Image (tube, rainbow, N blue to C red; front, top):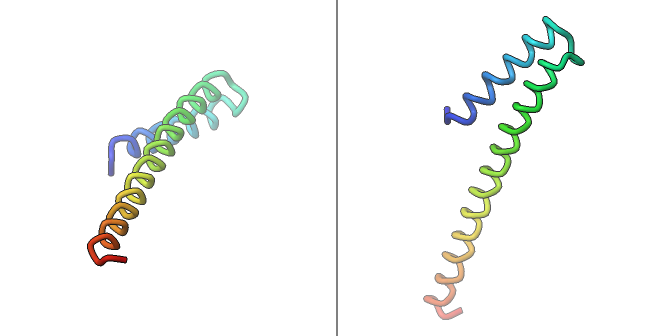
Length: 71
C-alpha cells in the first residue's frame, strides 16, 4: 500500500476516534477532517496525473503505430 494511502487510512481512523470522543462539531475533529481532505485531494491529483500520463502514452503509441503501418 503506497505511503499516501496509509496516511489517508490513519488520518481517517484518527478523525473517527475524535468524532466519537468529542463530537463532529468539535474543533479537533474538524481540523483532522480538513487534514484528511488535503490528503484525499493529493491522492485525487496523483490519480488524475497518472491517468493522463497513461492515456497520453496510449495515444502516442497508437499514432506511431498508424504512421508505421501507413494509415
